[in-house]
Image (cartoon, rainbow, N blue to C red; front, side, top):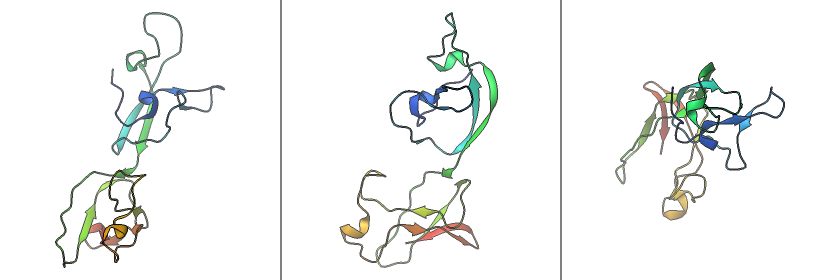
Length: 137
């Protein structure tokens, strides 16, 4: 048995109205914010009884796997007046993906070009280099 994974909407619980198409349960945010990786999909049939489907402990049947693509978190230090290249690693990354350097929370913050970095133009394209995927800031 597993636990719900942080960053999954509705604690990772999916609902279906037709038994074919599934969506994260509830009316809350539906954006996946987990770490990248491969996760197991588990099943529970909503019968009344000891093992209810309202928590991860009721989902005991294996269905398959799901891949959450994206970069692994990392910190980078760039020195003023110097070139700065950020190497990326993660799951399912490709050249042409985009990064945004934000001053605050991702998805809501302004880009740093508005904070005194006029040469930095968001979004920044991920490039394939000799050492893997990089972003040049």
